[in-house]
Amino acid sequence: MFVWDTVAQIIIHYSDGRYAVKAAIHDNKVYVLRVVSYWGVTAHLELDYCTLGTMEEDNSTVEISLGEKTAHNLTNNPADYAFEFDDNNMPIVTIKNSSKKYKLIGKDGKPYLSDTKGTFGGHKVSKIYGRLDCPSANRYIAKGKYVKHRVFLQTKKRLLPQGTDLVRYV
Image (cartoon, rainbow, N blue to C red):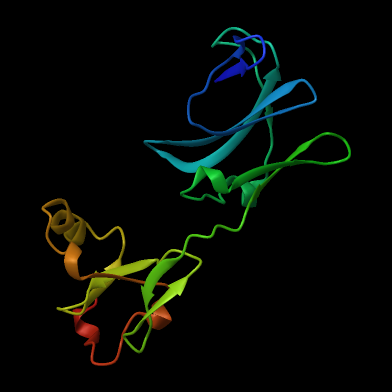
């Protein structure tokens, strides 16, 4: 994580930037929000800070507890994360409303725009629907197949458009 002084034209801070998705400078501290995701660990947010002016990668940081709900509130767009500071100068991590819309298929089989991503996917032509982590579907997608007729659905309630055979659900 580098901080550049635009007036003096020098680096005034250097610290560990692994997994960093957002940073903020407040009250002479550099706060770094990280999305930590690796084998065996559920993806989650971590927040820490160090003093502005640090010039080493292996500096000591102070971790700030985010709470279970905030720590697992992930977004695909790092620009959606925001820092706010309370009266005690403690950071609060929030997610701004994104203007991104997702095209989903409703129970009537017609597309609509949603603020949230679909949790199920399927193949519109064969009317096979299932979870987004379906190994079979992901193999076809990796081969470049399936994508042209791929659809996304928000909930299981909307999972079966009219004319879809329940047996075909995977």
